[in-house]
Length: 86
Image 1 (cartoon, one colour):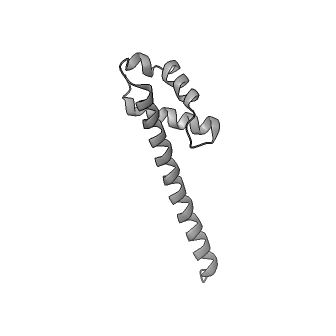
Image 2: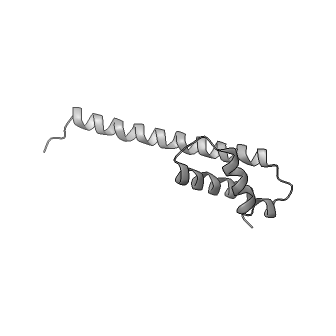
Image 3: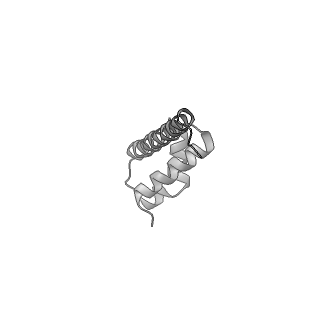
């Protein structure tokens, strides 16, 4: 049985892939919670707490992507300003 955090990561990845948004929709997460087995695997799990876990994962992934994008842009800009000598 997957860990609850694994379900949250799966939900975040699937939500981002489907919607392209980093703000979690309550209906979507409720449907995932019920249809993807979270409720069966963790019958005492609170939907609101699970939604918070998924939102946290979405935010973390968005911040990671932003940092990576800034790093790539910085390297690109520095490469343009200081072209390598052959």
